[in-house]
Image 1 (cartoon, rainbow, N blue to C red):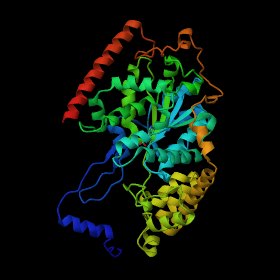
Image 2: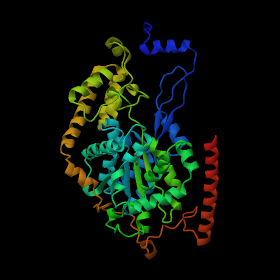
Image 3: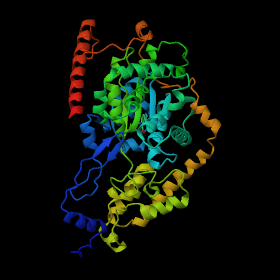
Image 4: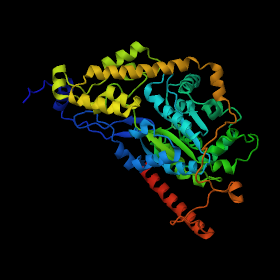
Amino acid sequence: MTEPEPPSVAALSFAETATQSVSKAAEQEINPWDVQAAVDAEGNVLEFDYPAISAKWATKLVDDALLERFVRVTGHKPHRWLRRRLFFSHRDLELILDTYERGEDFLLYTGRGPSSDAMHIGHTIPFEFTKWLQDVFDVPLVIMLTDDEKFLFKEKLKQPEVYEFARQNAKDVISIGFDVKKTFIYIDSEFFTSGFNRHFNLNATEFEKLVTNNQVRGAFGFHGSTNIGSNAFAAKQCVAAFASSYPFIWGNDINTYHRSKQLAAIPCLIPCAIDQDPYFRLVRDNCARMDQPSPKPALIHSKFLTALQGAGGKMSASNPNSAIFMSDTEKQVKKKINQHAFSGGQETLELHREKGGNPDIDVPYQYLAYFEDDDEKLVRLAGEYRAGTLTTGDMKKECINMMSAYVKGFQEARAKVTDEVLEDFLRPRKLEWKGNPNPTKKVEKTEEAKEGAAAPLLDAEGKPMTKNAMKKAQKLAEIERKKKEKEEAAKAKQ
Ligand code: TRP
């Protein structure tokens, strides 16, 4: 038997709160504006329960079968974030693989709300992943910087200030290494006043008509005193997934009034953190009702990167010690990891050698799991940590080396992003991409398809539906939709 451990600081504060005998339990909260891990009765912050959120929102978990198919279709080894399920959930990713297999275009779309001028390692993750997808699939990409969203949702922010954040963030995003030929980055306040946005606006207005106050209240928790801009903003983040919002990317005339049916029919894949899913459920529920219907956008969802303080902690620009920022010096990175990273090791070296550490809650190990590509090395580090042969100090050193190299590489790239480079990305223009060089399931397009008719609806056996069956199915879908709307309205009133 070993000596009982002295109570840790956490246990002491627990004793204090326990005497107040107030249960602090709270369920996890995940929505686009609030991400909080669950809290147990003693006030301890728990880890996020990702399978639970996937089940609650009816997304699919990324599994081996999907990744095997990914390898077969693309010829690429899955990114380590897929292998390790840090991108853990999806909607309709298999349909995107079908599209790619047929050698057809799809649009990649992601974005960021510029809430400060400093990006941290958590912010770069969706962009790093999107860049990898762009390299793998060779498709056009749009990146939406929602300065309008942040302005509308954050009481204190002024328009010029958020616009400047967006410009700085855009430079950070460019530093990830996107190919300017295939990438259009836009800052909402700029693009929406540029004259290039006619079709985007027409889509937004049409979509705004399809969505009721009750629907956005249900999806986002808005209420009667929420400003009207916030209600309307949802439509913008949604129609940003329609290729027909960006005719110039395909070299189409931007001065014609009429939107392109062919472009509307192009599928879209959105890499994002799971908290953005409510927006995209809204677009998935309503896109088929557009005059020129778009397919439901596919999604691939990430988990949240843990703050330096450990499970459930939040990385925040207002707490520099909560995160490693892309602007940190080598010295700062080292100091933050050494002094602030939560360790899964034991209190003393002696105990650690005896009992071993826990990599699952060890923040330096968690960061290595994100950034170290070598699977074997990672397994070895975890094994040695558990065995107690690898110390907390060793793990921190590995992490410091990895993160310093990542931040340094980023900063070197960032130094090259001049105002001219930024303007190149922000200019609405025709993009260039090649797509799948060897489509294995190429389908000859019928005349009708060439004219841009939406793909025929299929029945339960996968056969094209007759016109009558289609009408019936549409009617049923409409009834279903109305029912859902009523339910949501009732929910919003509760
Ligand atoms: N609402 C997102 C945020 O606050 C920004 C955003 C717009 C976005 N479009 C997106 C994020 C598409 C992911 C994918 O960060």
